[in-house]
Image 1 (spheres, one colour):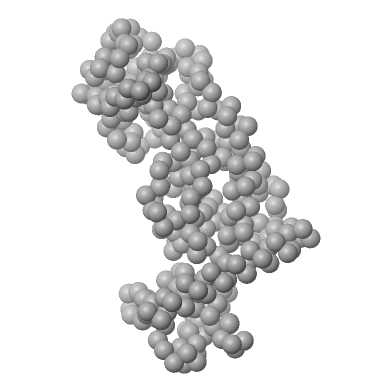
Image 2 (spheres, one colour):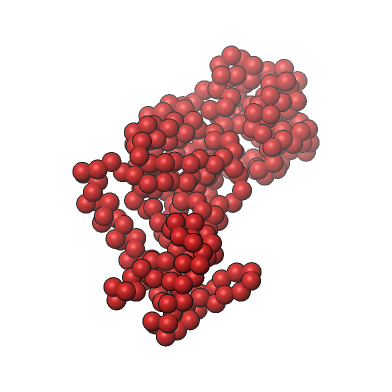
Length: 303
């Protein structure tokens, strides 16, 4: 079995990445050496583990069985090794994290920056992008996203939540006022962010109302553009409180329907149970939740 352990580790890397060349990059080996390890392991076991084609790789039934067990064993071994060495050595390794192109709560980013300073031997890579993270096959370890995750196969942890408010200029409110109920907002021009639906859910005690504006005056793909448009009087905007707090304090914008609340958007961390760096992922998430909470609470106070 000792002769097979190296081959099993290489096999798990190939199954994780879905390609021999990606597994080679991960392991610091050549593609030919990776292929040799897989072929030798298949010969030793007397079965095919991976079906090869020019387009993609697929695990055989025996390959899936081996992968599920081997992946759990490797994860468990990594966690134990980390626990043994954590008290005597600084955590080290690499972590590749993806975040939204715009992160509405700076407390999460600040906590990550503090993590980098606290653990200088961990090489952290941050990619700001909104595309779906295909974990664990995009050479990513951790994804931080705003909103409820749709992939039930991934591990999730809530980091914080983002409070949104409806805002407009005082002149616009005066022009269309008085405004006391969501029905009063139907005819107002509305600024829509392309990542958001064309309606806003508003809650007042036990009452829920879905506001569907008749007129979208502007569509944008930048939250800062939505704020600028709102401040110039183009229309009503649904903005994170962290973005518009200063404009509200200065009076350039006003909170429309303050007695009605928009449900908060969760900020969620996503990672795969097959991730190779579970111990570092957990270390970062523990740091974010412990370091970021005071700032998060401060950022989400009512205007």
